[in-house]
Amino acid sequence: MAYILIAPLIGQFVNTIIHISWNHITKGKSYLSSIVWSFLFGWVVQVLLTCITLYHCTASTQDWIGALGLNSMAALGFGYCYFTFVNLLKTSLRIRVLDELKASRKMGMTESELNQIYDTKDVINMRIFRLESWGQIKRNGDKLYPVHGSFYQLALVLRWLKKMMGLPIGNLN
Amino acid sequence: MLLIVLFVSIAFLAALVTQVILWRVQLPRSHFKMLLIIFGLFLLLGILSLGFVADWIYSLLFAQCYGLLALSYISFYSLIEGQSPSLTLVMAVHRKGAAGLSLVEADEFMSMEDVIGIRIRELQRDNLIFAKNSTYRLTRKGMLLAWLSCSGRRALGIGKGG
Image 1 (cartoon, each protein chain N blue to C red):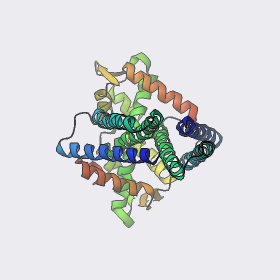
Image 2 (image 1 turned 30 degrees about the vertical axis):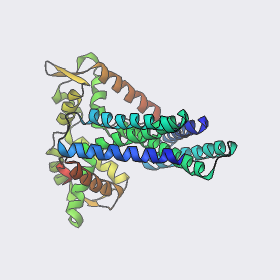
Image 3 (image 1 turned 90 degrees about the vertical axis):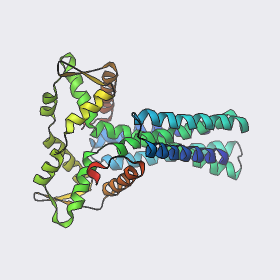
């Protein structure tokens, strides 16, 4: 039974190793697909381990359904936490500020120095480039056009969640 | 096993409903701490109640599955609470529709936000940086997080973020 407990852990380990290798091989070009495919590999490993354990302890049908469901939920949890961690490293402005302060060592930095390194124009250009390469918007000349991608759907869901929780909607209005 | 799936689902849903009710009554000062308290309480409740009806291994299975779902939700919550520049831009482009959003408009739209200033205030609030003579430096906690992010990026082979 204890093997069922560690199956999602092993699955996540496989997910991480495949994702890191994939990133180094492709130089981080296929960001979203690498996340999805490495998660699926890890999930398959986790399912196989769970099935082998259940087969050896002659479990009932209910146990098979329960254990596979439970471990798939755990694998999703692990996978999402890992995705958040990678996403944070790649896109978080807060983390970028911390990195710049770390690079400045004991000297520290003023707000204007931080703004010079990473001004608003950089934020926009980097975002436009990323959103375009992920197929979320398209650029034609000096104009940006909508594509009904997953980010737009996500923004709508977030706006609804903000409303439901009574949080300020801000620019998502 | 199905009993644990039921326990995880009920505990997770109950924690979510509790959070929404509390948020509707009054927004807490520290959202993150309050979420940890709510989800932590339901974790304890689940472990204790499962302890009465099943073996300890089932409590561990519950704790692992529920704990991971709770952590996932808490990390997703930062997306709900925060103002993501990427999502803001996607929404602005969609509002313009077929007419398109010009790069100048995108510049003006995003410049309305004090992008770095907001982040600096948040980092100060979370005790990750401190100001001395209007110069910002990392606290110990901030240094640890910066070291973790640098190591993570090196392992993943990705450049500077943001």
